[in-house]
Length: 349
Ligand code: HEM
Image (cartoon, rainbow, N blue to C red):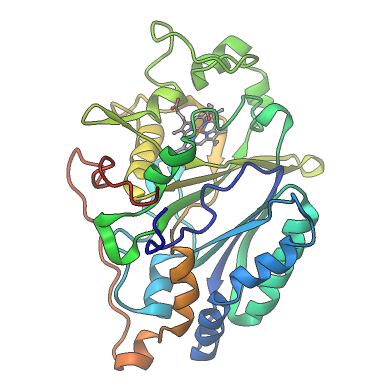
């Protein structure tokens, strides 16, 4: 990797056994905005201080900002494709949009590390923010999702993961950054478990025990795997997921926290459209008959270098006396995922 390229945050971190997902909204007031900007310069040091105490603990934290929060905290320039999460679907099947200004995705081998870092990071933020959702995820047997299927198999790895998740020349000012969409799903486990395993396999598109993909002749076009496989100009476009099961058996709560990183929101949004609306419309993801999205937010992840530098930015009102610019709509071209060229853009080698 050349030294003049912005270092990404730990987006493609190692697979860990534990995670905490925190979504927060910003509280009003210039003093709170100052607190959050100053905090940006402290994140890396806190991860180092907590993580160093447990060698091999693989502690990391990725932090991101929602569209409105970006304008309020940092003004312009803004990441080209940053916009609020777009709700889609109708009736029983809706990918809801819920409030979210700040995301913390904390990962480690053990929950004590995640817990301590979350405590330290939130402690510094104090009453500048309001936590609106906090999920403690655990790695299930065999890398299995709550629904019993192995999850994460088709994730890109190594340089491919970087190519699919890290912004390059298409938005040079924000190179080294990423986008992420998070959704909290709750499952009807009684309904799901009542299905024959063969039916579940047709819904996911893979064998339950062996995790082998179903043959094309028997895999339905409505399978989760078919609807989330994107091909553009003959090339597959991937995203990087690190979903985690979570829940409270005593309360009958069984969930999957979906988290998907990419260098543009477009491929994740296209997958969501395929799942919720269907491809063609009506040919939707039957996993959604047993899974309800109860949150949904989109965030920009600045590079590690930019995150630290954001501490020196001034809010829009402080810098020019004008209100924050309106969030710009993401560029949208029919039939294109707007991710720029994936080839010949390997600047993170
Ligand atoms: C209820 C929530 C979800 C569950 C339990 C779930 C579970 C799974 C499982 C078990 C697989 C197969 C193994 C693998 O390759 O990882 C898979 C694949 C995949 N999922 Fe999901 N998923 C969920 C939501 C989503 C969402 C919301 C998206 C995107 C917006 C998504 C994108 C993908 C992709 C891209 C693949 C790989 C497809 C392939 O290349 O075959 N998933 N998911």
